[in-house]
Length: 203
Image 1 (cartoon, helix red, strand yellow):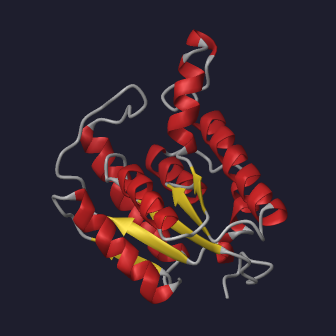
Image 2 (image 1 turned 180 degrees about the horizontal axis):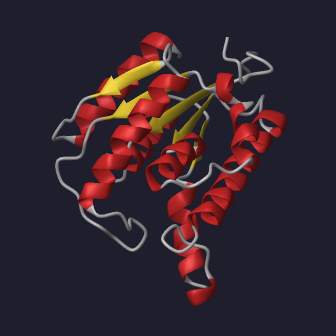
């Protein structure tokens, strides 16, 4: 049992996908969710809140809270959204969902803060109370191709650094629930692999 958890009671299956920017988390989750729904499962996706917040904050212009202008406040905002999602899912939707797929997740906040030498927000301790709600963690392999976009702000060197720190952190937090997803050229092959793991271990 983790020292951070006050309960290990599982009311639904929560599956976390972790890895650095560009490692394919979102693409796998979207395709996997389609497949699970086709098979009759009720699926909820916890979006990548870091990307969502960057998009919304950039619309505010110079007044936005962004990772390259205020890392601490940005990570605090990210954590707030993930904590709200967890509270809503576990307190209100327990009997309505079969599986939750989480894109990136708030646990990676510590990795970003440590790479940047920034204090981890105190809200992180609240998130850690949910650590044993996570049934399985898929760690994505390094991306072979990488490009920036309107929300993916990291350059390739930084993306690699943060990827390895995210992997290290999640291995520390979820050592008994880790599945590595090696790089595959075809998205369908990757989704097939993840789906079969879920069938064997959780569903």
